[in-house]
Image (cartoon, rainbow, N blue to C red; front, side, top):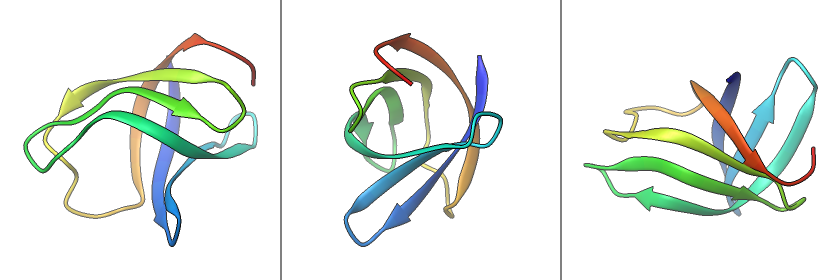
Length: 73
């Protein structure tokens, strides 16, 4: 599992992994409601990660642990 940061931009969510200096746009997120946020996220580069579903964070940027599912980095 990796520590990542998610922030909001004008175009949507942005994924950032500081340890590898990877930044990409999130093209889809399985759950994106105030009561349930996270699940499988897919990146613009084809990568996919899983964030344990949780209550949506009150503020962004937000640091969370994610597990790589498949794809490229």
